[in-house]
Length: 139
Image 1 (cartoon, rainbow, N blue to C red):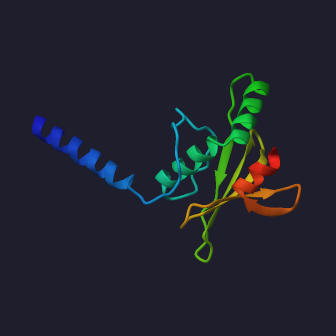
Image 2: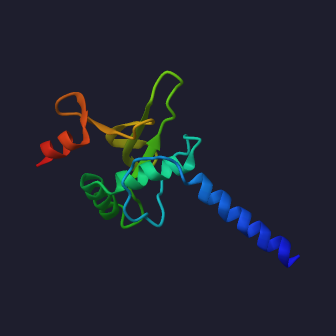
Image 3: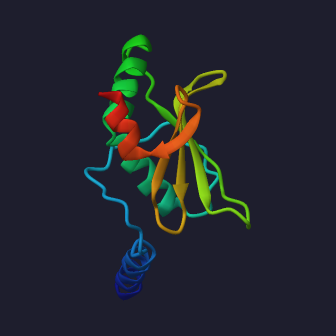
């Protein structure tokens, strides 16, 4: 019985290691303990977690998270809604905002599922721009 349990654990960890070894070019820092409000639309949970972990590292997302945290008396966090790209599209659309009874979108990201390039909708100029350009314009 002990041998069965040990074998099971080894196989479990090996399969987890294999599933997380995707060629995803996102730079990740520390993973948050929990991410509330994510709609599980993408079939690849590892990809979904990498996307939301990366977005959580952006300074303006951290500011929005602090804002939501303060007005909700430390009960809510920024939420993400992710869409699965259709067969003809490569972009995963991610809305970031406040989710209560209705989702209030603050930012809309377009993440290329093949290259993992992140773009964002610039609501002031009515166009999709690179993340660098958006952050440069925030200064």
